[in-house]
Amino acid sequence: MSITKEQTKTGTHPQFFILVTVFFFWGFVAAANDILIPVFKKFFDLEQWQAQLVSFAFYIAYTVGSIIYLLISKALKADLLNKIGYKNGIAIGLLISGFGALIFYPAAQANSYALLLTGLFVVGLGFSLQQTAAQPFAILLGDPNSGSQRVNFAGGINNFGTTLGPILVSYAIFGSISSGAGADATVDSVKTPYLILGALFFFFAVFFWLIKLPSVTQDVPSESGFAALKYPQLVLGMIAIFLYVGAEVTIGSNLGEYLRVEDGLREDELAPYVSLFWASLMIGRWTAGVSVFNPSPTMRKVLTVVVPYIAFGVYLLINFIRGTELTPLYIYSVCVLAIIIAFFISQDKPAKMLLTFASFGAIATIIGILGSGKIALYALISGGMFCSVLWPCIFTLAIAGLGKNTPQGSAFLIMMIMGGGFVSMFQSWLSGSIGIQQSYWVPVVCFVYLAWYAARVKGILKSQGIDYESASTSGSGH
Image 1: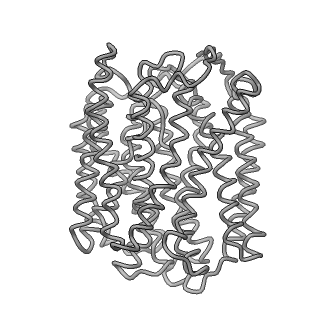
Image 2 (image 1 turned 60 degrees about the vertical axis):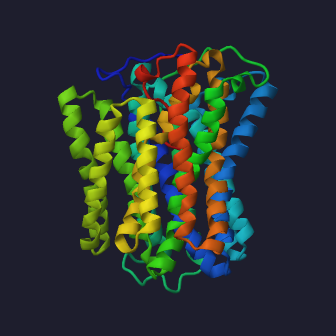
């Protein structure tokens, strides 16, 4: 792999900061889906599992998109992105997502839930191509040894989008940032917001087509068949990605139902808490991404303590502007302290970090299941913080030692993003039998597997002569 432009002193090309705009889009739209779920459930009189088709349609599109990508590459007898270029791949993906957003208008006109799901599916198809292009592009825009720092930083931008998404979409749909404004909202309320979103997608597609970004080449021999699947770290890692994305999505997408049932909130009152879940991911990824600025070891420790509270402060500021009563939210600072402890335990080692964060996630979710009131709610929401760095850890460990099979292995891992749809659907179905709070045993099981994978892959890699302790995390948040 090579890049034709000079890097900055920090090992990162300055135009990397243009690339991260698409990471913001992914987060913004993914989090906005959690606002749509209760709105559609109420308007179309759906069961919770039927409302969760919103998440399913969106995340299954990643798998379908990856399969289409591989089939096109096979037909071309060359990697598609190597042929058209990374920035053009991002632009095409943005166009596809733009068309998906426009589908919302006729779908709302026809009061068609199926057509609304189709729109989300097409948006997800575009995101699939954008992710396939943008994630390796982020690694290549600078020194490969600092690639993990860039993708963690990009993940932080992604979660800035997920933090703003519920607030801004709630405002756009319900017409006000004050509670009570959305009591009479209908499916027609999504027309204008998604027309604007579609226009933004088209604008940024043209922007990426016109902007000058460094030329990237990737000289990797093509591999026939599915040779990457002979590596146990990849196969077990595929399951890990499936369950990690599943845990992250199911905690957030079922949060609205939890708040409605357990706390008696209306649809228009959910945004601050849904936003706090996604802000929790932002807290973790901002902290993990501070290395992109190449701080000294001492400053890195200081930032590990300070940055999480800065990120939490950004969330509080957004909600202060919205008019949200902040007093009940301050106690969440205790949860923020927990992630700081987890970072110091992890020592930036991917397997140790995966084991630590997955274990903390399982413990927090169990507290949420067995507890009550705000303690239970914030314990469940804090699962977002412990999900925040899992993707790069899993990604690094799963592709370690794959050599020329690395691109194929990466494609298989991206396919597993579909776990976000399947796991959230399963929890929603289960909640109909055992209740929404007890259904959160589903992400607990996901976290337990991830902790087991962290311990198991250590032995697998050692048997292949790979020193996982010195591996640096690479990959990014989905």
